Amino acid sequence: MNLTDYIESHRNEHLAELKQFLKIPSVSTKAENKADVERAAQWVANKLRGSFSHVEVIPTKMHPLVYAESLHDASKPTVLFYGHYDVQPPEPLELWTSPAFEPTERNGNLYCRGSVDDKGQVHIHLAAFEALHKTLGKLPINVKVLIEGEEEVGSESLYEFVKGNKPKLKADALVVSDTGMLGPGVPSVTYGLRGLNYYQMEISGPAQDLHSGVFGGAVPNPLTVLCELFAKMHDKNFHVTVPGFYDDVAALSKAERKALNSLPWKAKDFKKTVGAPELCGEKGFSIVEQVWCRPTFELNGLWGGYMGEGAKTVIPAKAWAKFSTRLVPDQDPDRIAKQVEKYIRNLLPNTVECTMFETLSKGKPWVAPFTHPYFKAAQRALEHGFGKKAVFIREGGSIPFVTDMHDTFKVPCILMGFGLPDENAHAPDEHISLENYFGGIKAVANFYQDLGTV
Ligand code: BES
Ligand code: MN
Ligand code: MN
Image (cartoon, rainbow, N blue to C red; front, side, top):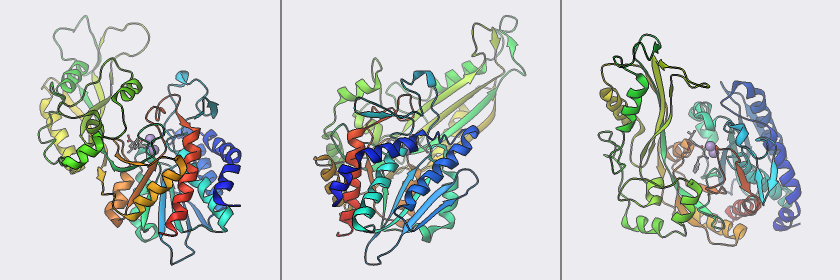
């Protein structure tokens, strides 16, 4: 049987298998799911054993890494495929139409936590490896596979592993499917990602919670202090006010600006997905530039005081915040972390004390030229899978491993994403379009086959 017929005739098997994988609640951030995360790693390893002679589940301090290789033809190139089998927590559960870990088909989509980020996209490659192995008797090129279980919590074990295993991971290209398509029916190759620094802080005012009637009016309120602080982080043009924040931002070339702004993309669709009454963004830049090419400061959580039912008249002793900065070339995560911390500490009034300031994680931005012949191969493969010419895009999300590999090996990183912007990654009712899932298998299988002939 040829490759296309095999893929076409195994749609039901592939989908049924993906559902099995999705049912495992591999939430990396929760201790109660540790056994499930382990089970998901074993599931991936078992699946890989069908097409790879060497498969390992590598224990780490937190969640296992799955590594496989099939290095059988020295005359062919070697690619490293990277993905993650861990998922975000499903909460808030009451907002899911069908239960978060019961894969459910509705309107041509498959709903489940992990369906698009990233288990569904990982399975596209697992199915493609199977199809190639079954129809050719072996993989058409040399392949290394690295699937981690800590992507959603900072990939610490992965970096530990990379540090000690560089030769093991060396390849001619990195292949990743953990990004999106520009829109429905527009297959896309991503050549840029933003970096991410994540911070958390605690401030303390009164020595303990106070009765707001007895003390209110004369004492500092840490929550109000944080509100004032974060209200100062942007000016009226939505520029970030951290001194030096934009110093190293590389200007877009005229040609790139033009190319990005003429992509088949509609602000109307973006607004609809967002669902807010109005958009707001940095003045002087288009939406595409704002989310792909400009750095941001975002408050991600602010808490303290009373958050239970009914009223409690209290002035909280402490208040907390989580916030992050998305970074673009050529911003340096270390330098930005220092600037942000210094600015925030300086802005705090002397009525409160900063009792904790931590940069939880740092990650570099990535952008690379798409001139290597493998990018053309990706474009051809995507056209084969989707019947339409692929476009080259940048994205606003972050996959720090991509930067790491690119810096280490200076190899082309081919990001073929199959998610859509409105598929609710990290949110309730996460789903993947079945058309994109099946189109993805075709495209990816053809890509690997084609690399055997480039
Ligand atoms: N798959 C996403 C990254 C992504 C999303 C890239 C959308 C491009 C478009 C990944 O799983 C993710 O969520 N990354 C985190 C950062 C990570 C360090 C926790 C992110 O971007 O917030
Ligand atoms: Mn992901
Ligand atoms: Mn994610």
